[in-house]
Every structure is written in structure tokens, then in C-alpha cells.
Amino acid sequence: MALTTADRLTVLYACGHLMARTDDASEVFQHVVDGARQLLNAPASWLAIVDGDDLRIAAHSGLRSAEMPLQWSLKVGQGVGGTVAATGQPTLIRDYRRDPRRVSHVKLIIDQEDLRSGAVVPLPAPAGGLLGVLYVGDYPPGRITSADVNLLALFARAAAVAVERARHGTTLRRQSEACEQAAGNLRRRLLLLQQLTGILLTGADVQQAVSLLATELDTGLELCDPLGRVVARAGQTEAPAVTQHPLATADASLGTLTAHQYQDLDEPAAQLLGAASGILALQLSRHRERYETEQRLHRQFLIDLLRPGTDRGELMARASLLGLDLESPRTVCCVGIHVGPKALSARPPVLTGRALATVEQAVTRRFPSSIAILHGAAAVILVPQTRPDREALVQGLRAALADATQALTGMQLSAGLGAVCLTPDDYAGSYQDAALALELARCRQAGGVVLAREQLGIYGMLARSLDPEGLRSCILPMLAPLLRSDDQRGTEHLRTLRVYLAHDRHLQRAADALHLHVNSLRYRLRRIEQLLTVDLHNPDDLFHLELAVRIADVVRPTSN
Image (cartoon, rainbow, N blue to C red; front, side, top):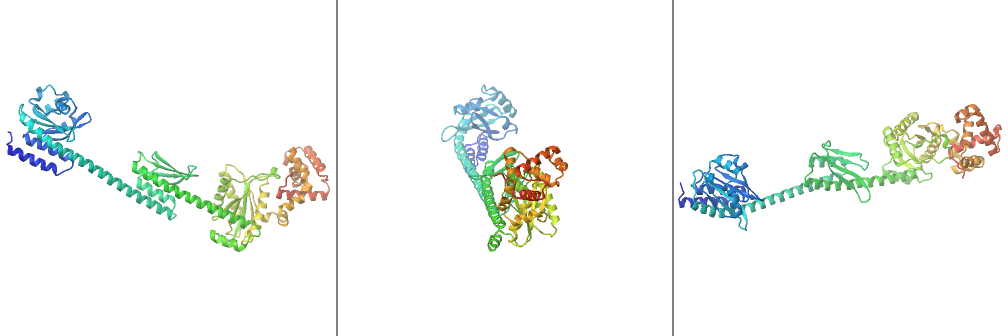
């Protein structure tokens, strides 16, 4: 039954009031289809919105099937609704089952609703164009009239204004929500960055900062040094690596920060990770600079400590600033690369920075608070002497050398140990003894030797009586011909003489040690006698030669 004019005015007023009260587009759509049903006193209505070239249902009222809104779709220009969308002209459907414009897949859906008559009107956009089309359907054929179509078209024009306003309001609301979300993300980022900065400024380990960042991002993080070794790890790092940030300053690589996650980080999280990476890079750079400064200060201090004649008061003051206790007993230990007896006259190879770090780590494991620097060709280590038992110290250092040798893939090491230092004045002498002991230890047949001061014997007496240049000047006139021959012709006269004297002039044992036939050894000895103008059977010549060879073991003279 058709509504009276008064009823229709009531419907229009109520629907307009409802649409004016909301700026949510989905609610306005629903008020439009509800109002259209009431306006024409029809059982069903739906609103299809233009989406590109397609029409899709945005709201419906009175449909029997819940599947119908999901299954219904048309192209613009296709079917009854598509034609209205293309032309912008309202249309009356007297009997849908006989309408030639229907589309097969939509026909089945409408037939299931048992809708026969209907009206379809455009929903024009106020600024031009089309928002969509509005349907009203009824069961009996011919139930809806041309007057109903005209009334529905007027209603659609008014509704279009409300729809456009609501869509604009929805857009503004979403933009506002996006802005609020972005502002919230920014506040959280700033708070997190402040927390990270606070953690790092207090001197805390970077592990704490990485853990905080991993919790905030809900991801696994790994901080690695430039060599790929893990410095800090937090969260689930078993997932694939999705983002990797290099940590670097203008002149140095400090490592990488890698995020592990099964899906890509969203943009805010990626930006936060980038900002945090910058802060971590600054902190790592700060740590490196501080470490390098401390290393320089410690190294220079230790060099001055090992040098004779440095002012004691100055040493004590500098030690206090560096946090070093010079009143606790320590022993100077020198560690270098083992060369064996064949290299008696060669310059000793220099220990690398990596080897120094490995040796320091091995010694510190057994003797905490040890201090190491690279001085000359060797590592100089101040080892705490916590117990008076020197043998325990020697055994511990020997074990540390074995660990370092294994870590350095077979590089043989030897060490020399000086006297116990009780005052700053003791370090120079202890270092001199340790350096001499190292020179003798590294020339032994096998590596891994730790030679202590008390084992130096005559070498220690000679070293403490003259400086190295003085010792060289004593022996060069005697040994120079051998050194020159060894250097220019590749002979082994000095080594042959040393082994011969070390085996108490026993020809067979000396030949075996040199891997020579006895006759070859005799020939070499005659050649040595000729070069030096000596007689190896003369006691005076033998004494001077053996003393010279022993001094040569210490000062390493060359043919120059």
C-alpha cells in the first residue's frame, strides 16, 4: 500500500535528521537504504557505490539472503544498474524477469530474492560525476510506478549530499586518526630514543640498549663488530634477517645492526631502527675513542715505567690517574715469536696486534688484571705476583703460551720473566732481565719456553754490566768474519761454532745436532779457524770464543 504524502514527508524528515547526525559514511549509506524502503513502502533496497569500473554493494536493507551483497556485482554500463550508472538516468523496472538488460549472474541472485519490480536511480556527486546507484525492489510486478521513481530520484539527490559530506568527514577522520597515530609513533620513538641515549650516556653496556630496542620493535636484533662477531643479541634471532643497518663514522666501520623477523618491518619501525642505529654508532665510536685514548695513555706510561731514570713522583701521579697500583707486586714478562737456534743473528720478527690481543687474553685468563702493550718486537706484560711461588707463575705463563699458540694456528711463542717489582724503580731492571730472557728463550730448539731471570746465569751478569752496544763492540772484532761470511755467502759458521761449543766439542754429537757428517763438520771447523785466525784446541781461544758466542746470543750482532 502506498504511503500518504504526510507519511512520506515524515520519512524524509526522519531520514534527513539521521543522516545529518553522523559523518560516518557507512552509517549514512545504511540510513539511505532504510529511508528508501520506507519512502516507497518496499521490502528491499540496496546501494551500490562506483569503484573504478565496478559497482559494489555498500549497504542493504530487507534482503533475504546474507550472501546476496557479497555475490552481487556489475560493471558500469552492464545490466540495469550499470546502465543507470553510465547514463545518469533513473529507470523503472516493471518486471525484472522480462527485462532484456539483466545479466545472467545477477539474474540468479535477484530471482532468489523473488524481486520482480523496482526502481534504480543515480546517486549524483554534488561536484559532478556519480557516487553510485540506489535500488528499491518489490515482489509483485508493476508495484513500483514512475511517480515512485521520480520521488526516489529526488531523495537520492538529497541523500547524495549527505553521502558526500559523510565520505569527506570519514576521510578527514581517517586522516586525523593517521595523524594521531603518526604523532603517537613519533612520541614513542622520541621516548625510546631518549631511553637509549640515557642508557648509553650512563656508560651501560650496549647489550641493555639492544634489548630495549628489540622489545620495543618486537623483533630479534644482533649487533656485530666489523669482523662479524656478535657483540650483543636480543629477541628471536632465528628468523631470517630482514633489515641490516651498517654502523659507521666518517672514517671507520663499527659493525652492523641486523633485525631478524619473518616479515618486513613497517615504515615507522624501520625509521626507528635507523635512528637507533645512528645512536648506537655514536656510542660505539665513543667507546672506541675512549679505548684508544686509554690504550695510548697506558702504552706511553708503561714505556716510561720501563725506561730507566724516569721520575718516580711523576710515575706515581700518572699511575694514580690511570687507576694503576704500582705498590702491588708485579713481574715484567716479555713474549715474542720463537725463532729457534738458526736465527741467532737475525732481527726478531715483530708480534702483530692480533697476536698481542690473543696473548693478552690468554695471560689475563690465568692472571687477572694483567696489563699488556706492544713494545719493540715483543709483548710486554705486567703480571700480578699474587703469590711468592715463582714456579707457579712460570707454569701458568707456559700454559698461557700454549693457549695462545693454539689460537694463533701454530705460531710458536716464547717468553722471558724479570724480577718481582715492588716499587716503580724496579720495573726498568725487571724489563731488562725479561727482554734478555726472551732473547735466549726464543733461540732454544723448541718453542713455548718461559725463561726466568734467575735462570740467566752469566748472561744476566753480562747484560747488567754493559749496555747492548758495549757488548756488541766487545765481540764484533772476533766474530765479524763469521757474521760476514754467513750474511754474504749463506754459510752457517756462527751456528756451527755455537752447537760445537754447546756439545763440549764432541764431534759426533755436534754433527748429529747439525745433521752433518763428521767430516763435513771438521771441514767447517777448519774454515772457522781460518776465518778467525784461532786454534780451537787452544784454551784461551776457546774461552774467548765461547764468551763471544754467549754474548752474541743476547745482543744479536750483524755483519754491519
